[in-house]
Amino acid sequence: MKSYQIYLIRHGMTSETSSGSYIGRTDVPLSLKGIQQIKNNISKFDYPYIEALYSSPLSRCIQTCNIIYPDMSPIILDGFSECDFGDWEGKTASDLAMNPDFTMWLSNSDKYSPPNGESGSDFARRVCKTFERLVNDIIKSGITRIGIMTHGGVIMTLLAIYGLPQAPSYQWRMDSGFGYSMRITPMLWSRDKVAEVYEKIPYEKKLDDDKD
Image 1 (cartoon, helix red, strand yellow):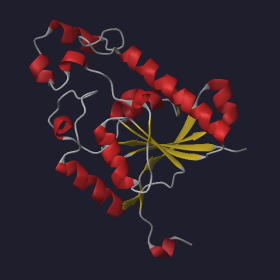
Image 2 (image 1 turned 120 degrees about the horizontal axis):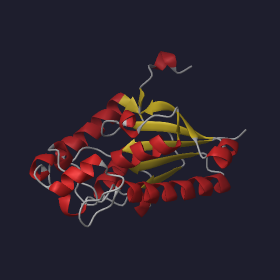
Image 3 (image 1 turned 30 degrees about the horizontal axis):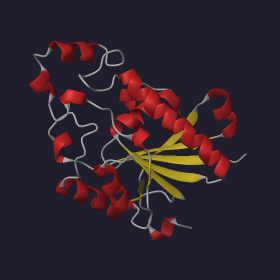
């Protein structure tokens, strides 16, 4: 039976995330270190071949697309943006430690939201709606290998909801520039809305002797 490969890749590092700041919808670029890290990944690893590339609209994702897949123009999907941290964008946990709203949010981020931001439930609903629509579109189109360049929070949410084996979101953490491969089987998807998570990406480069 025909299956569809979806490669979820986290964008490269930014100065803000390296400092521990909450950066969601704020449009920050890759740091110089982040750019070099992705270039180093390309020299050490192989990213998967894809037929179409989708991306969050934020610069850090688009820049990463342009480095890893320079010959492809990403299709922008707003629904794959990171969670909106509202008034807490750019602040660290230390900055917010004495804020009672922050304490409440930490206790149940699905229910509570940052001021002028998204709750975990609203974020997951947005991401899942975008993902399910995309999966249905690629099954109809016949394209079998796509990449999605997005954010750590988006990837962890998708894998916690749809991934097999089942695991909580924190177990799906990944470094910048890395991600996971998912296999969509139409019958399983239409019946249970689940997908097999079968390997981490990118792959170790193979020596010439191993390519046969």
